[in-house]
Amino acid sequence: MKELIKQIENTAVIPVIKIDNVDDALPLAEALKNGGLCAAEITFRTDAAEESIRRIAKAYPDFLIAAGTVLTPEQADKAMAAGASFIVSPGTNPVVVQHCKEKGYPVIPGVCTPSEVEMAMSLGLTYLKFFPAEAAGGVKMIKAMAAPYTKVKFMPTGGIGVKNLAEYLTCKAVFACGGSWMVPSDKIADGKFDEIEALTREAVQLVKEIKQ
Image (cartoon, rainbow, N blue to C red):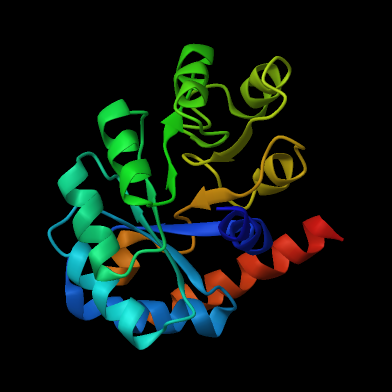
C-alpha cells in the first residue's frame, strides 16, 4: 500500500472517467499518456467499466488504474481481475472494505464527516477519498477534519478543476486529487481525444507549477 500511495502522490491528479463505449478506452488512455498522465480512475457507473479496465491494463501495463464507484464486493472482484491497481468508492461501506482487505485489494473509500473518518480508521484505513469535495466544504472542511485526525490523508474528488486545484494540492492533509475536467464525457463520446490530450497536458503543467 505504501508504494501505491507514493505512486498516487507522485501523479497528484487522477482523472475520473465515465466510459460508455469500451472502444473509447484505448484512445482515451493514449491521450492521457501522451498528455503526461499514466493514471485513470474508471468508474463503475457504466457497463463498459470492467472491459475498459481490462483493455487499458493489457495495452498499458504501466498505467495506474483505479476502479471507481465500487459499491459491492462483486464489483471489486471484477475490477481487480480485470487489472485495476486499487479500489475507490464514494462512501465507506464496511462490507466492501472488509472484502477488499481480506482479498488483499488496496482500497480508498470515501468520507465527508468525522464519523465516517472514524469508521474508516476503525477498519485500519488512513488514506481516504473526500467526496463530494466542494459540496462538502472543500479545503476548509479537510483542514478542520485533519486537525483531530492527524494520521489521515485525503484524496478530494468532486468539483475540483483548474481554478481550485492549487488550493487543494497545497493542503498538507491532501495526498492527491481526483478530477474529471480533463476527461469530460462529451469529449470522450465525440472522440475528441486530441482535445483531451491538450487538457491533460495543461493539468500536468499546472501540477508542476503548484509543486515548485
